[in-house]
Length: 107
Image (cartoon, rainbow, N blue to C red; front, side, top):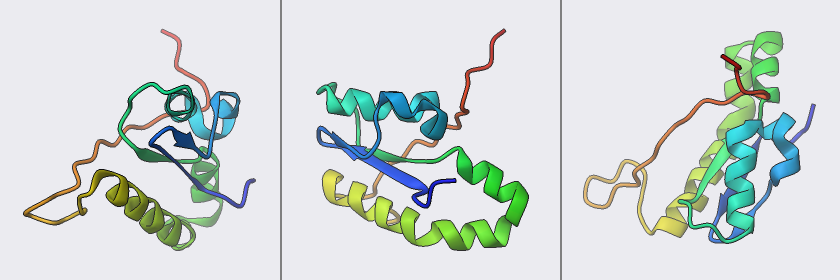
């Protein structure tokens, strides 16, 4: 498993890329790649698919402890790009949360 659990993207930069689909899931890898090629998408971050495995192996409390600082830093990164603050009633950072998987479900 990777040490890094959270990958940011925004403003034409991304820590991930399209070929990291297994680690970032389809949505996460595609959002990173779209940023890299200049498609205008809002900044954000992806929590890796490995975190799900860690959750089942180590438990909720351990995983929350492992993720807390990385998620907080990623939120601050998005706040700086969007010039808004998470939880601020006068200038709130608006977010969207999506789940993803290593592979899309085929119907």
